[in-house]
Image (tube, rainbow, N blue to C red; front, top):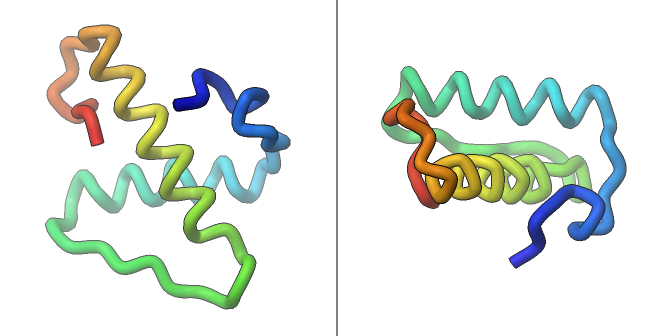
Length: 70
């Protein structure tokens, strides 16, 4: 598993970063979430980056219960 965005061969895009935060916040208030959008708009990338970040925070034993291995 890659350890950083650079190892994932990705570039930081402000709009995608915003979408990652929005998805995280949505997961905090909703039980079921569905990502919808056009082909190649970044749905999987947003989900994968959030999954990776939450897993890394859980592995580092972050005390916040929001961060769990995914």
